[in-house]
Length: 60
Image (cartoon, rainbow, N blue to C red; front, side):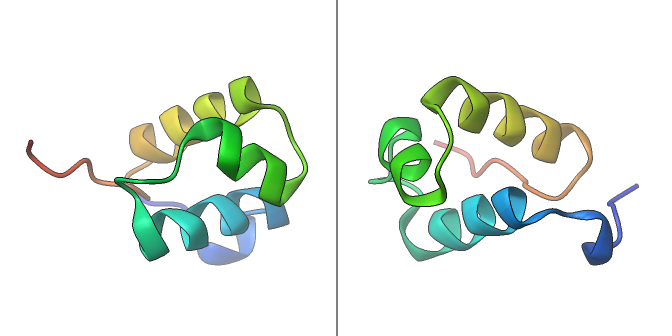
């Protein structure tokens, strides 16, 4: 079940925004620099967002 948007913090919202803009060409490093966290934090947040249904991975 997806989280309600009010449960997302500014980092999650920033990650989602940047992925919506250009998911294929944004690295966790680049996203981290833009939202102010480490690339490993971005990777962990993306995993949680996927697990919670906020992000659905596109087929390759």
